[in-house]
Image (cartoon, rainbow, N blue to C red):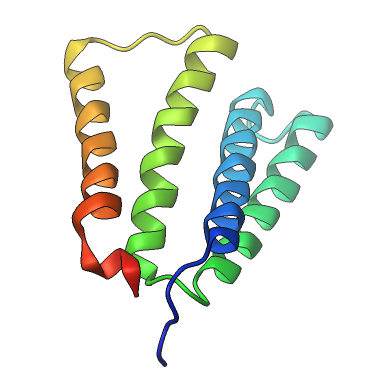
Amino acid sequence: MSLSSPTSSAYLTLAVAIVAEVIATTALKSSDGMTRVLPALVVVLGYGLSFYCLSLTLRSMPTSVAYAIWSGVGIVLITLAAWLIHHQRLDGPAVAGIALIVAGVLVINIFSSSAAH
């Protein structure tokens, strides 16, 4: 299977996948072990939308690149959501590790020719 060059719509679909996954993961904490109905419903719908959009992204973007972006950006956004919504804190090494994840995603997108096919 030959992948075409990712378009802006592929990146938009990937962004929707990331946001849906972040919402679902944040709701997972709020679901209290899937015992609260509304947050549990958000979890199921959010993950479903996320994986559907991620699958659409894979039509024009290599799996490794799409997953690196999806997981890397997702980790950063989930960390931010956990800090804002659930008042969770990180220590210096955790912040440094997340910064390295961001750096890795940037390197892939700016310098890797894999991201272009």
